[in-house]
Length: 532
Image (tube, rainbow, N blue to C red; front, side):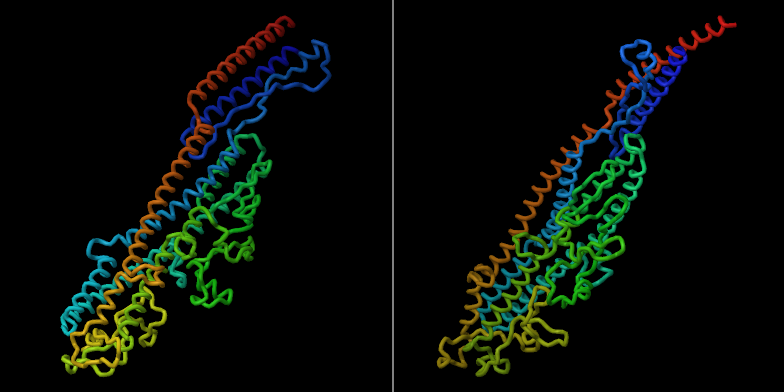
C-alpha cells in the first residue's frame, strides 16, 4: 500500500509540475500582451485527513504529496486606482490643451492680417480723416478699414463657433451633435460599461485563483483603464473580482448590470424637455449629458457638472464661459463679443452725439444744418432692420447708412462744444474725429478699464498664457502617467529571467518526480515477480 501511495504521490507531482510549467509558458507567451499580469503557481502540501499524533506510520500515511493551492495574479489595487486617477487627469488635460492649441491657431494673427492690425489701420484711417475731413478718399478709406475690422471679428466668431461645434455640436442640430467629439466618446464609454458588466458576470461564476479568473481580471482592469480615460471614476471590488464603478456619487456599473449609462442631448432639445427658452435662458454647454438607468429612466438630468475628469470632462468644460478665470472658447467668445459691442457703442455714441455735424453731401462745402444721427456700426434682425441691441462679434456690421450712396458723408467730423457756435462753413472742423482718435488710449469701463487695443492684446495674452500653462501641466501629467506605467510594468510585467528560474525549478522537480515514479514502478514490478 505504501508503494502504491508513493506511486500516486509521484504521479500527482508530475501533474502539478506539468501545470506549473504550463503557467510559465502562459507568462512567456503573454509577455507583450497589453494589460497582462504575470502569474505564479502557489504549491501546497497535500495531507490526507485522519489522526496523525506521534505515530510515524500514521504520519507517513497522511502525506498526500503536493497540490496547487492557487494561481496567484500579481496585482496592487492602490497602484491601479492611482493610475486610473492620473490617467483620467491626463486625458482631461489633453482635451483642454488641444482646445487651447486650436484657439491659439485661430488668433495666431499673421503680421498685418489680424484683428490687432485691423484696429491699428482703423485708427490710422481716423488720423487721416482728421487731417482731411472733407476728403471723400479719406472717408472711403475709413469705411473700408471699418469693414475689414468687422469682417475679421465676424470671421473669428465663426471660427470659435466651429471649434465649439467640433467639440460639442452647435447646440441645436442633432447632426452637428452626432459629428462632434463628445458624441463619439460618450458612445465609446457606454460600450466600455457594457463590456465591464459582461466581464463582471463571468467573474461571478468563475472560481477565483484560477487561470480563467486571472485572465478575466486582466480584461476587467483594461476596461477600467479605458473608462477612466473618459470620466473620473472610483472602483469598489467584491471578493469574486467583480466591481462597482462610480463617477462622483453616481453608480455606473454594479456587478453584471449597467445601472447608469450616459445619454446625450443638444442644448436645444434639453431645454425643450425642461421648459427652458433656448437660447435666451440657457447658460450651459452645447451638449448635455445625462445618466439613465437600465430601463432608460433619468437618474441625473444634467450630469455635466458631475463629470469633472477624463476626456469627457475636458470636452464639456472647454467651450463655455463660467466666469471662473479659465480660458477656453467660451470665455474668448465672450471677450470678443464684449469688444465688438464696445466698439459699436463707443463710436456710435460719438457719431450721434449732440452738436456733432456731418458734411452735406449735396454741398460738400457746407455742414448739414440738422443731423438725425447715424450709427457707424450695427447689426440686423431677421427682418433686415438695423438695431444696436445684441451686437456681438458674429453680427457686427458697418451700418447700411454709411455704406449707401453718399453714406460716407454721414460720418460726423465736426463738433461744436457750444451749439451756438455752429458754423455751416466749418467743413475743416474735425473735433469729433479727434474725439474718436482719443479712444485709442482711453480706458473703457466696459472693457475692464482697458482701451480697445489693450483689451484685445490682453485677450491674446490670456490665450497664450493658458496654452503654455496647459502644455506644462499636460507634459507633467504625461510624465506621471509614464512613471506609473513603468511601475505597473515592473510590478505585473513578465520578467524572462524570473520565468527562466521558475522553468528550471519546475523542470527539475518534474524530472525528480519522474525518477521517483520509475523507481516505485520498478519496485512494484519486482514484488509482482516475487509473488508468482
